[in-house]
Image 1 (cartoon, rainbow, N blue to C red):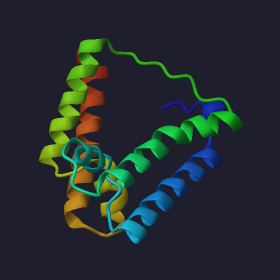
Image 2: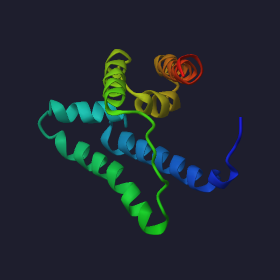
Image 3: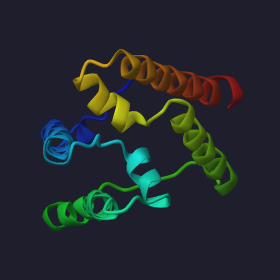
Length: 143
């Protein structure tokens, strides 16, 4: 394994992790809600009365944060090494996985693990193992 030291960003990574933790903590402390992105978006698809405002605010912050960051520093270059049908299939598989897993990596991995949830530990391990297996199969067996 090679580490691209020119792309090693410990301070911005630490700051991003702290901001994610603060946002998740603030949401549960002030609103009593878990910061799981799939649940937040899912709640917008079937909105309950008085439940749309905080969901939209959270998603606007999620999208707006990189825009604010871009005022201080250059955003990294994004390259996608997959074609359209592969991306659509991957998105659908992630959606199905979040339904079967009763949440996503942010809900289970960030919020659930910090609450010492055994179910979230099992879900996070399953997410990670599936990701490792997918990368291994696509990079080493299929390619």
